[in-house]
Amino acid sequence: MFGSHSAPQGTLTVTVIEARNLHKEDLAGHNDPYVELWLDEEYKQRTSTIKDTENPVFNETFTFNIAEGSSDHKIHFKVIDKDTVGTDKIGEGKLEISEVFKGQPIDTWSKLPAKLGLSSHGEVHFSVQFSPA
Picture 1 (spheres, rainbow, N blue to C red):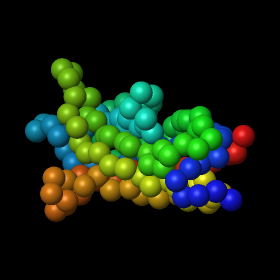
Picture 2: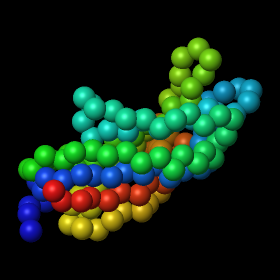
Picture 3: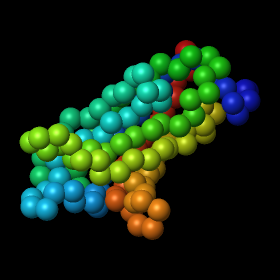
């Protein structure tokens, strides 16, 4: 098919299904989380904000156009708590997606490692598919 360092041209479809056990950033109340995701810093997409929960359900789908030969094989994501003034980062991670270019859909939970990786700030459930052009 193709080497592990390049992708065929097509469309990557990423569904942010839900998150669970998110680390509480606020001293009082609950998080108002949203997820920001990108392959390339130039083109970030984000879910809507879900109010008052550490276990939000998003069920939002995003598409990314993949150029032939692309070496973007990781989805970068950040979970953010939206506050009245500003935001707090709950956690961030990367999801390896090279398998999806070989026709293998991905349905997985991806952890938000805490600093030093000693504990987790929660997990995000993703479904990823690729459709060649």
